[in-house]
Length: 354
Image (cartoon, rainbow, N blue to C red):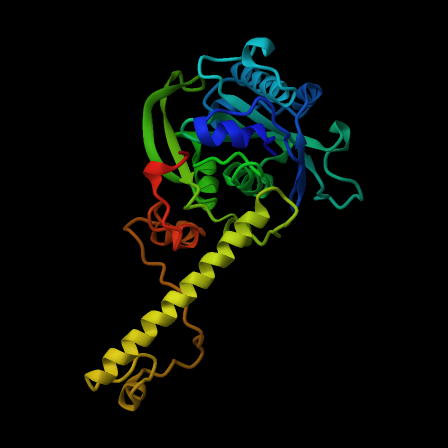
């Protein structure tokens, strides 16, 4: 939650507030709380920096140094310390928000949560490089070696992004959230696509691959506030929406408002089409002609009567699994056309923040 100073400074001058209250966030299998310096010891116990070169493009030592700096920046922001005072500033004074990820799951059914040795801490999630001027932030997750590939990232990331995109003072009021993915980390690439991220560019030879002793590209992926649907991101994986999480009520309200407008527009278009058809003696939309109905092919015995919502035909070489992602390319809404976020609002981008 952003304190009141954010509304006074952030909206008029696009400056970050002096202090932030990092809210707890509840998930399906995890819950998040503000990260502390003491939590950093847990990451070593979890072997969280194992394979860092493949996951983030840096070796374990470099990744550990970065994570330690991120947590200290987050704590400094919570304490209201200026970058100069905290000793962790940079020329643009970009801030960081850090949460510890605590598991609530019991995958081995032994009656205990999965990480009792580390007080249920299994990793951290960050919004880093928080840039108030462009309203942009980068998201990154780090998990213990034994807690990867269990769906924890898909549980935590949409909820943190909802907070990041939520308007101030409920959230950070970001316009864009992005990730950087090493070219050889194809697994994370698929996860980010499923959450609504799309490739936006390639930074050539931006990372050093210590395993193969060569440079590698950094794939930049992002999503914008009027493209991102937090409810859909969770529904796609059968996860519940918790209305008490920061930004969720605002997202639900915006979604319901846009759906109502869309229904009104659809009804208006339908009435116009019927009127035009009757005027020219055509069959109104929605009333099938008998001969057309009789000419329809009957379903073959044994085949499903239910038609799929959409075909999976895609670009050549596109796998079926990729086309089934909830944010497939064919379903992606661009920033200007994301109807459930922008329809009826008449927002002028060139006056935003004035």
